[in-house]
Image (cartoon, rainbow, N blue to C red):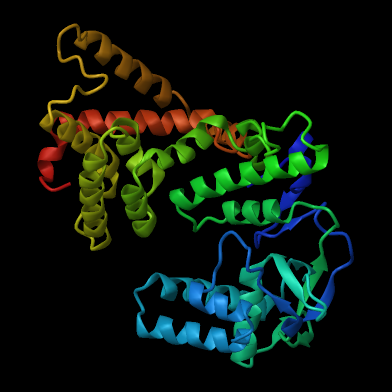
Length: 393
């Protein structure tokens, strides 16, 4: 969650992000009004669509009205209750219920369509728009305090002229918790391109121009500042694009966590065939965990061991493995005991104070280091025989 307004190119983006994910601040130029739902349509150029692709295209071409598209969407979800579509619909139904009970806490943002029919396109808030469409289809009303409103009108505000529409849409998508690491990586790349294009447009290419007049990419720091994101976290997300296309498709389809696949990204970059083998095993482990047959705490260290074994099976040197020669066991033991003693000295008050220091600092380094330490300790435990308790995980 972005919490600060940065300077420079990222000033175009936002002041804060609200609970429903809408970007507010510089983007809104006029008071919030209630616009007829039928006068608003999703932006066909939106980087990430909620509606299934064919239905979104039909709505964009005017072949389907939104209510009809929603009806078909619900039918598909009911026909395949375990699909991604069904999961999207369930999330939308939860949002619609929240809107029904409390009203739309934050408005969507819209811009005039490039047509003469008086319609508008959504800049941010497509999920809230479809929640209203769902309420209309099911003939439900919205309660706001003692007032009862029709969902056929939705709270919306027009965006300021000249803002970077695509940048706002990309940022909103990146702030969502339900997108996977591949989507995040492509979103970060798209945001960098949009910021670069916008800088080129605003400054006539000054300092951002290549030969031939094309815009040159701005530094990654512009993206990090715009999202209040650490360089380390950004590198971890972007590194997923080092995987082969086939591997990325597996990660995307099965929503594998970045921390889980990190050993695969770090060590199997030059080996696409091993990437696929490793990911297929990780998917099998994850499915076993979903059935209650696995220990999720062992997943990351097991992936590390798997990667090393795959490399050794091809007689590829494993980075960082020098064998037992030169290993000072007593030094390792003393370091472990020293760290343990220090942590044990942190009484509840000290731990609460530490939590307050970390709170609010996005991707705080200490949290990342502790997570890395935990992963390394888990890996050592696996190698020392913990994995023997579970031969398949």
